[in-house]
Length: 169
Length: 113
Image (tube, rainbow over all chains, first blue to last red; front, side, top):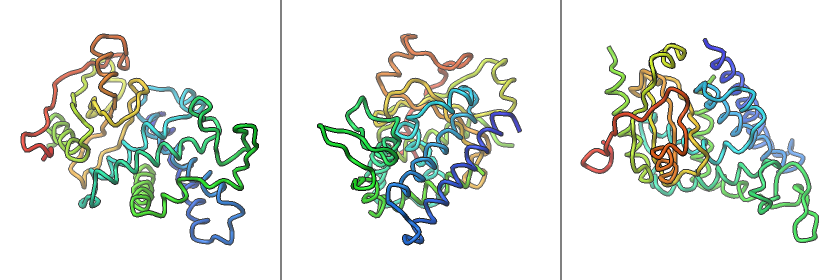
């Protein structure tokens, strides 16, 4: 294995651990202190999966990838689309599902406090933020992905995400 | 023995079939030196996708998936139509040693199959 492969595997293992932490909260809501924690693990799993695929390509250095964010909106739809290609059966209403995956990927990306879309989306699942002179806490916020993930396209998203992570281990 | 070019074309058609937003796909070629560094034959596709977001030419790599008929690692570079125009005008760079090769047109039945 090349050093890029080693980095990719290391990122994939972290993604797997983050996803399993998310799953743990999903399976046992009583263990959950706040919904934002659960989403934080999902966001981290998605980011690390994208980084696994980026470093494996060997074009960007692990150091560049490590310190950057913002890969989820761009790359997660392509990664999950590849899982659709691998699958024997395609989701019904594929066009709608892919559009929802694209939308969810963008919303999950901004759960990271470093991603604010030039200040237009300060909401994140880790730190309080100020908007319009009012301070908001992630503890009270109704995060869009939390709702979308329970919809049929959201369940497909999670299924493809899980498969994509496992494929990298 | 698996044929990398044939599999590249098949993978491109599968991508066309899955997403309507993919408007064009090209096989990317590498110089012999870059390929030697990579160490294994790899399918590389440049996909012009009107549904992706602009971020430059950032390749992501997938491992082989023999059970799905993909026996080589594959690298995908997704760009917007506007980014593709910039690549052609040499205003946006592909990774060192990579260049745009053969265009893989969408299969005539329109769904990539």
